Length: 138
Image 1 (cartoon, rainbow, N blue to C red):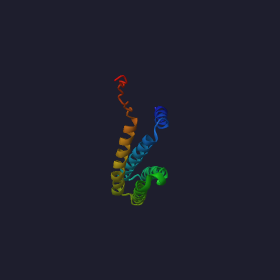
Image 2: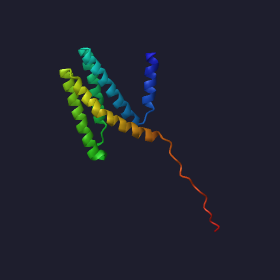
Image 3: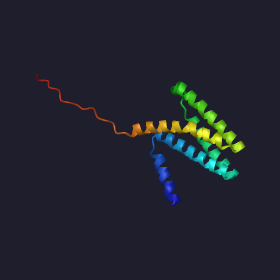
Image 4: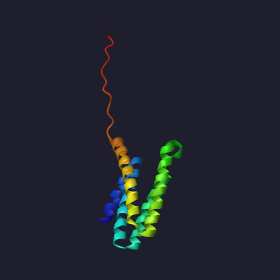
């Protein structure tokens, strides 16, 4: 069963657009952060650490994909947000603080939703322009 799920994930990622991959990264980061909250509440230090590190690694990946040349001020602001999220997750890992994790989830969720909307628009079929024959005879 786990093998089938892994194959499904691999196919989804391999066939995904760059925008869809960004959405998948955001979703995975949120999943790991939610898992870390449960681990903190269960006082499972190892799982807390592992989930927070996974979330941080995803944010590092998102940072590495920013195109600062074409992205301009938006890319700069995203970089600042990512840096802040990383700092909050480091604090959460050190202090085992669920509030810091929830803070990052509140920041990252609207970003994921925006990218999800862009991905949905990309996948919509392109509407053909309606063409009418031109009467050249007068």
